Amino acid sequence: MARSMRAIAVLPAQHEVKVLTAPEPRLQSPTDVRVRILEVGVCGTDKEICAFEYGTPPSGSEHLVIGHESLGEVVEAGPAVTKVRPGDLVVVMVRRPCDRPECVPCRAGRADFCSTGEFVERGINGAHGFMTEYVVDDERWLVPVPRSLRDVAVLVEPLTIAEKALLQVAQIQARLPWSCETRTRGWCHAAVVLGAGPVGLLGAMALVRAGFRTFVYSREAEGGAKDSLVRSFGATYVSSATTPPEGLPERTGGVDLVYEAVGLSRLAFEVMAHVERNGIFVFTGVAALKGPQPLDTDTLMRNLVLKNQVALGTVNAGRDAFEAAVADLGVFLERWPDAIREVITGRFPIEAHRDLLLGKPGGIKNLIALAN
Ligand SMILES: [Zn+2]
Ligand SMILES: [Zn+2]
Image (cartoon, rainbow, N blue to C red; front, side, top):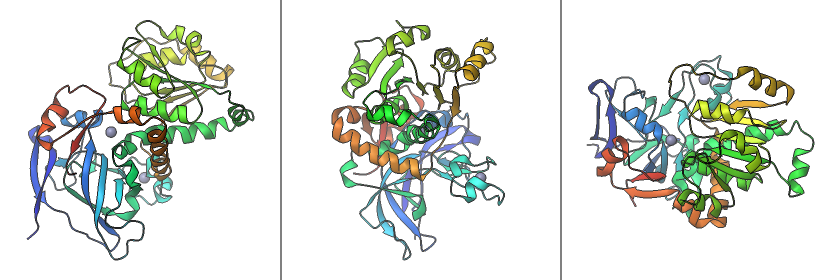
């Protein structure tokens, strides 16, 4: 008899969100690993799934176990597993490749660039997620995490968004022969982060670490809690309440990179009009569809061409970004131990799931703790 465990799931057909019991998963192949989930981050994606905006159960299941921002501990490893062993901390990657032979990215191990759209994502689309006590997965989807990162490693997955963006920004900047040289001289480009939620704050930390003069642009007034948090890791907070987009260049001394993490298209394009020559604009937010809005497309197009600008959208992350996130979290914890811990607002028991997923809990990143 399989033992049973609790899981937080949505039942889209019934429009229900609830804790249900399911049999504990078992190893299915010699390279499978069983992971005891320690904690899972709650994010906007989870809330949207719980509002039934999207989210697809695995085929044959009425429910989808949600949660994709995981931290767990290996408790059992199949006989052919070589990369992890019981006791190791791991983060489980989210996206699985499509099975179409013609999908070059998936066949090359880069499902984050899947060209068919038929990929599966644990906790989101076609596979159960991590808001449960145990999960089983193949070792190739596990990212080992040092024990020293136990308190913050649940932030690895949300940090991968910025890491994938930074890897691409580095590739784009490599076209400019002077970009690396200026960094070693200590002078660096100015980056503006749009939004001060978890994705924005983690992105800002990654940008500071990468050597950018970093500004966080958000609604809250200057001098408040977000301002002091941002200042504590070496970035500057600029409030959109007092500085409109056209005032940004004066505050920042020019905008060379924008890292959009707010999901508001109008604001994003207003800021885009103020990007410098050779600048890069990275979109990471998924804007709600609110209908057409007026936009000065002539200016935007002229800027893109005449100023050699790049606009880039990015989603999900490959193993390289997960490993960069683990490395960077180690740096953040060493340089800004209070700031990185402050990104985690609280750890809550499974019973608090309704408030966290259906309510407006506030704070930055709330966690559901499944085990200690
Ligand atoms: Zn998320
Ligand atoms: Zn694919």
